[in-house]
Image (cartoon, rainbow, N blue to C red):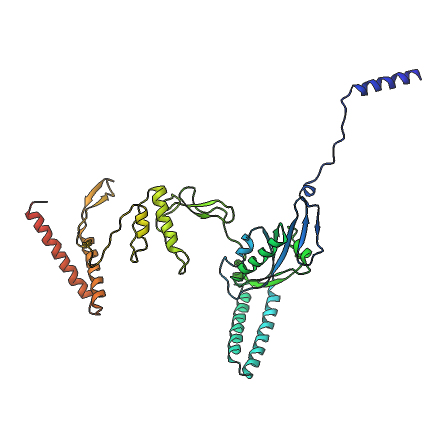
Length: 397
């Protein structure tokens, strides 16, 4: 008994000498850290995400699609429109089911075409006939293995910090999507299901699907790179995905040559882009540019950059001498040394072609043919021969 009391006393003294222990709070998981306090799904047309800062979310689904689409413009705005998440669920359709559905569609179109023909509706008859031909061609391609059908559901969720902005963004998004003839609808009374469909859970709970073939399915994917341009060069714009300036260097080592062509419809900004390239290349990189300007729109650019405007015309003091000779520097392929040369054969060919073009443009006669070209070439060669003899007689060579 006495020994037991001594042992308890020693244990108490040992415990008093130990460092005090503190209770650690319960560790939170990553899910608990990022999860909001709650989500209010009682509203019909939006959700309220309750957290330190309340956010509002509205989900949409694609309701209508255009008959034709341009790659990759179909859903670009749904991918890049501000604070938005977009999910695309793609399921391949079995070949047997594709054949059965296409046969049913073909029969239905043919029935409607016959009814339209009986009623004398020529326009509708021609439209239905064209659709039937396209459906038959698609069916044959699928049977041959050249094509395939897919069912896709496209869901997007737009976020905002107040309802007024959410309404404004909703109208703006609908307007932008209508430019590509894509119709979107709010998931009315299905906001919770649509929101869950747009989470990375791989569960499509609204199942508003559209049928795509292999070619049209490719237009759904956002084939855009996050890195555009070069590390050096002149700024041309801002990358919409990353917000980083886009630099372009026409002489970058990654390019095979310096050539460039700009294609766009009228009024899209081809001239503005070219003037931007010329002016910024001159200021930032010291590159000199030559513009063949028939309309005089580059004159202000040349004046602003301290350039020279050379006017060539019938009443101008400046002329272009087609017969002017210029010595060229050529690198010898064997020795590798540079030497001066004067290629008269190429010069005669260039002058002949220019004179033939002017003759065709001024006379507009069909008599300017290969025989005329040969006569002009011989006359040009004789002129250069007389010039060479004259130079030799004066002992210039």
